[in-house]
Amino acid sequence: MNYKLLGLCLLLMATATQAQEVDYEEYDLDNGLHVILHQDETAPVVTTSVMYHVGGKDRTEGRTGFAHFFEHLLFEGTKNIDRGEWFKIVSSHGGKNNANTSQDRTYYYEVFPSNELELGLWMESERMMHPIIDQVGIDTQNEVVKEEKRMRYDNSPYGQLLFTVAENLFKKHPYKDPNIGYMKDLDAATLEDVKAYSQKYYVPNNAVLVVAGDIDIPKTKAMIKDYFGPIPKGADVVRNYPKEDPITAQINAKAYDSNIQIPASIIAYRTPGFKERDAYVLDMISAYLSDGKSSKLYKKLVDEQKQALQVGAYNIAQEDYGMYLVFTLPVGETRLDTLNAEIEEEIAKVRDSLISERDYQKLQNKFESRFVNANSSVEGIAGSLATYYMLYGDTELINKEIEIYRSITREEMQEVANKYLKPNQRAVIDYLPGEGEEQ
Image 1 (cartoon, rainbow, N blue to C red):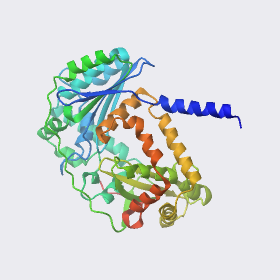
Image 2: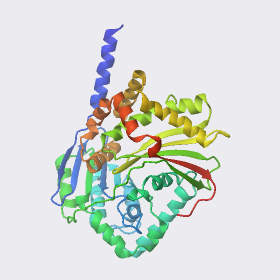
Image 3: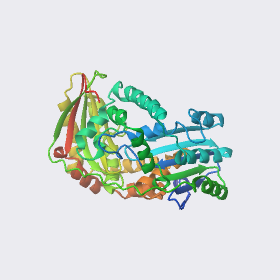
Image 4: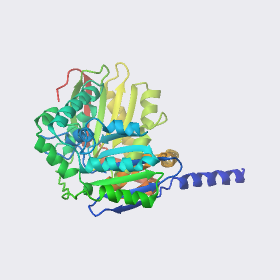
């Protein structure tokens, strides 16, 4: 064996892992806004981003979809940015921007040349401090959201699939309703409803500002204080969502989608929120079952037995509860219940015995590789910093989360599979071609 070559390889691997260490500084303004700064001078770009701790679950009955609606509405304009000018300002200064909303948070960001940092900070402070919320903007964005729903969900093959899973796994918690909301609720919303929502959630003490890239730290701090410091603090946001009763008997359901010709089988389990250690273990089980063509489910159902066109196990992470689902498309006349039995056979193996040491090492290598490749851009680092602080309550996870995966044992994988992935704790959904109900 060439020990010098082996030593060099190990050194390079250690260096690559070490290079992923993300340095950052974080602090709070007097109004409660949390600030995270990350300096990276490798390219003359900077990302300014704000994450608000508000998502689809933050609503009252009859007023669903507000967080997603606000994702659009807060591009309408501000006291100092005219309606329709937001995107023009960004593009004319060499930048790009976007936003997205989950059930748990809303995220806005701009990427600019680093000499435009002040512009990015000003625009996000305007969004927070001076949004124009009027009936014209509400009516305009209501139509935008309706068109998005038609394109992405109503007229898209398998577009209602996740909604169907959620409404079967959740009966009490707001996760039971789609993030985009029900259109009848947005139609019924008054200007007063919308303004009250803004005042409750889009406040500095319910947000984190991340600035990442080619920045001068002292100058950046001074600008942040100037632009965000004067924004008034809001009332504390209190959440007390109902807890779900355990699922103790298999739920059987059917759903119909007029946009598909091939039926699908969905097996879904309710799992813990992503901060729980068990959620990390479920990530590893998911990768073991279906990540890549050598995974257990793909190799068995697609390659060897040729019963499925596609199969995937997904651990959908959310703050309060997760959703673990296995999605399968059959080949030809293969019955959905046949696929379900084959899938249960593989999950039962994880419950009943330890995975092989070889498979376990492959999993560890896969997660090491994910860690090394993560945060490869300043834009990605900004999103990770915001997420780990806001939703996990631990910014340092950006550097140490891999240690959680490294510490997971084969015995723990078996234990967690037995805890959550049992037949009497699941929903089995036949997702079939046909006419569905209008949402």
